[in-house]
Length: 171
Image (cartoon, rainbow, N blue to C red):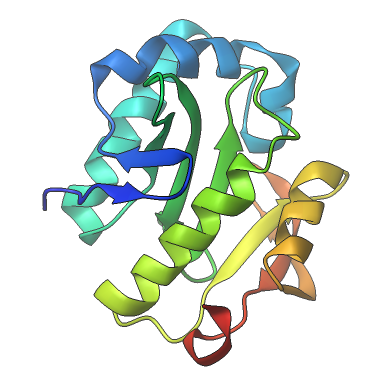
């Protein structure tokens, strides 16, 4: 599947490719990535990039590279995600270093959620938020999600399942 390109007021959501490796490697090398399996070496970050790209082939959807429309700078990795052993499909978000607190995660997550509801026909979706990840919790709250229950993953540990509002109320 070829990922579509989505647009919001400030952002362009596009297919990941090798040009997104450097910002991803910097993110995964930083302690900020500890909630999503990091820190990682550059070699492991490259494998994460390859896995994200491959998710589109395996599932027919995946996360988008989120870029500032004005500059093309990558600010995040956001969108539908459902790897093996996940409890159900989710909207996931990771913000690249230096782009926190600007509303990019909320803006892009809403756009990808709307796309998943309309293009993929989803009727429900979750987001997994690691214990102690207060920034992601605030994003989930801004998106209208409700805390449902804890979930323990073999690699990522304890996370909380946040349920998004359905398509009838989400837009």
